[in-house]
Image (cartoon, rainbow, N blue to C red; front, top):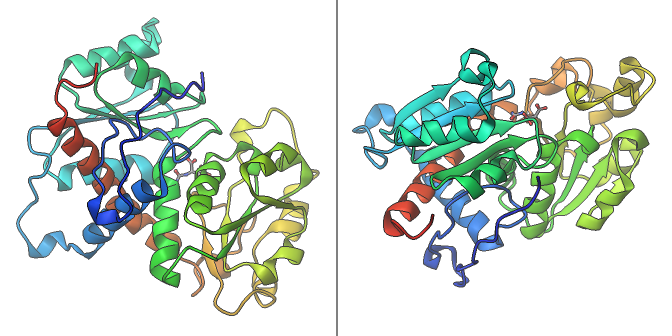
Length: 332
Ligand code: NCD
């Protein structure tokens, strides 16, 4: 199901301010250009500076309907898409699969088509099956945003991670970013890899051999199985959760051993660069991938990432909807 529909890349200008957003959907970072990624980041930056308490409510998406369709659990992504839509004055639909007619046998595509028939202009979709949002993009005419498809991609998470790096370190180009943990099952890893490489960072993926497929090197990343070897070289470490829900059987001997070898703790941090930046998409398992002192310490940008997530999602919604308005009827 991972057939990415062909979208013409009409983004030809070289300066971010000259770029016009032309894509109907946001399905992955793999198929975005560097300029498109930078355009989203720049727009998001404007929203970060916005304080809604000190100004009139924005009406950018007035009359637009944004539907959240989450077929997998979510805290940050779901609520921030909902809030982003409301901040821009959109109407929102929050679809809950467990209390829907899916239980009566209605198909995924039929369910989505019915929500589209209510006037949804944008559908934010999270699903356990890789390519599920791409499938909807083929069958529906509204804009589709991938909010995480299995172990494939999670583009807005990749964008908010990169925005946080840019804010904290002033650049992305030339940095060395370590992605540590369950690379095999992490959609966040794949979106980070595509986005970071396009913006000129070096990416090292690190974890136990059973959680780091060798084939990932084809994407242009280095592989390491020893966190202590790569840590002194990293400007940023993105701490990824072990995706137990996607593993069919145990892929390492014990959680305790994982924490000893790959967990980010205070002692390990002392051997890192003094200004190392630590990210984690959340949820975090305190004491497994990261200790509480590190998660809550000065190197951690975990909550700043959440704040940036709202801004990134506002930027994405606005870009897709503006595009839809200017190209009305041009897609089917
Ligand atoms: C991530 C996800 O769902 O892929 N979380 C998120 O969106 N903030 C990462 C994870 O679940 O570990």
